[in-house]
Structures are given as C-alpha cells and as structure tokens.
Length: 225
Image 1 (cartoon, helix red, strand yellow):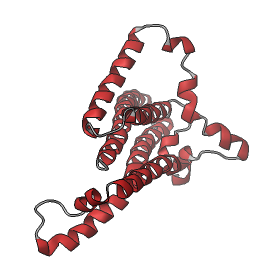
Image 2 (cartoon, one colour):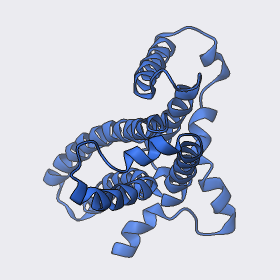
Image 3 (spheres, one colour):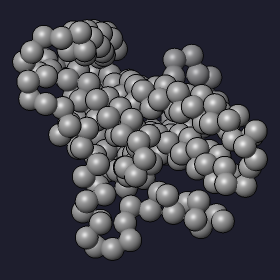
Image 4 (cartoon, one colour):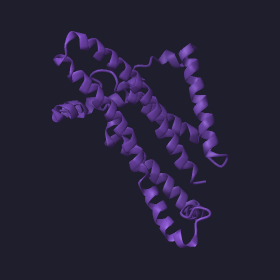
C-alpha cells in the first residue's frame, strides 16, 4: 500500500518518460498564449498588480543598497514555484516541486552565491552576524556555533519545506481517493465534498509556499548588504 501511495511521486518508469515528466516544470508557461502578454485584460491587470506588489515588498526587504533588478530574480522564483505547485494539482501532471532534486537545486546555488558574495565583499559585516548584539561574553563562542549551523542548514530547510508541503497535500488527496471504491454511495458524496475543500486548501498552500520560498530567499539576500 505504501509503495503504491508514494509511487505517485515517481518521476518516471523508463528513460522516455524521464524527459517528458520534468517538462511539467515549464508547461504552465507554454499554455499561456502569446497575445496574453500584449492584450490588456482583467487577468493581465491583476497579474501586473501582483508583480508590482511583490516588487515593492521585496524592494523594502532588500533595502536601498541592493542592485537594481534584484527583485525580479525573486519574483521569477515565485512565479516558477507557483506555476509548478498549481500544475501539480491537475490529474496526471508530474509535481516537480515535490522532489528535492528541483527545490534543492534552486536553493543551494542561490545560498552559495549569497554566502560567497557576502564573505568576500562584506567580511566584517558577516562576522558581526555570528554574534547577535547584546550576547553575554560567556555565550559568544556558543552563539557563533549556533549561528554557523543555522546558516549552513538554510538551503536544506528551504528545499525540504517546499517539497514536504507539496508531498503532504498530495498524499492526503491520494489517500482519500483510494478509499472511494470501498465506500458506500452515501459516503461518496461526503468524500467528494471533502476532496473539493482539500483541493481549495491545496491551491492556497501552493501559492503560500511559493511566496514563503521567495520571501525567505529575499531575506537571506538582504543580509549580505
């Protein structure tokens, strides 16, 4: 039972499917017609307003010392994660963000670039981050160890948080779906309503987790200035 349950996250069963399954990472953008970006519409206006809101929020977190255009990197990450999370809610579409091979491949290089840039260009500033202000002298060495460990595990927590939340929701939907054939007609209607409510919840989780991933990446980036 558990093997069949977790097989829903298996990216492929052969070499041919391996390349096709991971194309779901970009299938959301391929489904958008080219005229959508040029023709004004309500959806287009809402999309531009969302991007402007994210830009202003990320700009506030990064501060005035950040480079121009830095916010668009994190907006792009948000859009990519949100598209992948939403596409995974459709039947028979592979959820790439439920795999650490994707989330960790994004989080680790980004974190490494932040660390390398910060330690090379702002060494003294990074050393001050290791000892929070007001720390007693007796605890300074202990705090350096704690802050170092917390910095090292940041890419892991970013990747695991997103993948775990995607897996949890999909597992619950799969479990409810597998119980359908063994239920009576009276209970099937309750099951369908429960799955619809859970699907609405998962839609909210898909957007929230994409926002959390991008906002934490922005916060990590703001510490290098």
